[in-house]
Image 1: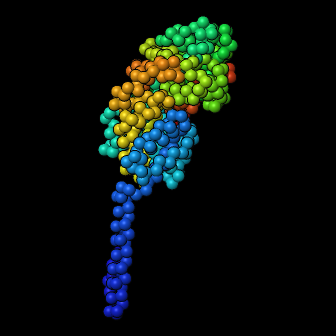
Image 2: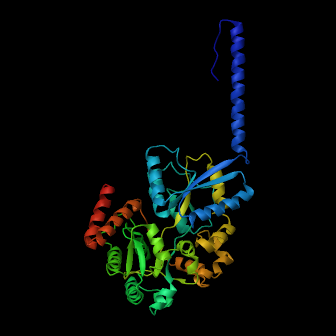
Image 3: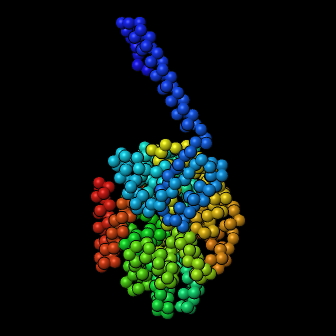
Length: 439
């Protein structure tokens, strides 16, 4: 309240004081009402969430909302489908412009982008220490969101990969699922040639200039675009050189179908053009959506490269939930995540069968659901198998410039498929990443 020093007339003084007290009373009442509204546990709250993939992430968030609403019916979870690339671009654009008005309360962030985002915008994300119990998650996942001693993310799926096989197609070629277990990428290529020759089907498909298959290969070999010290490791990375050569050879001889985009990739699986898909466990939801293919699919391990230390296990994707500091309901958002993704075995039991969302929240692994056979996959206990595969995934450090490196390697992949040598394409990619890093 503005201080009153002196007035010439008593009447004015009295009037002024009366007005001042009335003003104070109104302000205090407003403040009291505001405070009451903030602390009212039943006040309507809407949490907006940005995430992608209706059959996986969006489905999981919808199920989490149902569980939370049993005790908190006043909280509305507004899910906005936002493809990952669009989400990341919108996030960077808003934060760079210091305009958070259009941002949601919660985002889903790919694990390999968390460090970069938090490092570049340290005040944009809400620390979750003391708000969400992260002690019961697989700690390698928690580590992705730990930046300078603070935790910024709630782990979701672990992205463990597998080889999804169309049993009916490979059997037409005289092969069995066991022929694809614990093999190298060279052997996978050889088997793909047999499938192509005897059935006319492609062995596999990928979005032509997408580096995702390369990243699966690298992770299984225990290496990445950067070394343990954060230095660029592209041009002289043996695993990257071998992996891209295998990929280019498969495209060149028709073993692999290079498609223009994600929709064409899914279509190649649905219409039976290809005999396999090597992707994260989240592919279960996409493949299972094609009801007429029930019983025709199986899962086995991921191929490995011919490099020292390579494993038949890898990871693709993997993501975590983050709360924006600009949210007006940080505590509500944290409570929601804590009681669902960080606290509900029911949630993971519900989403597992149809989406293949393998939990990194450890208590969920005790659920009988992980030991049930999946009818779509011929009764195979695919979730138990995925958990076993995940135990052998080599751990790598993604680095702060992972997103930029991924883009440049994607350009290299496109150049290689257009005739540039693998060595030259990777030299160019490394040079561009070093430029971006200012080195």
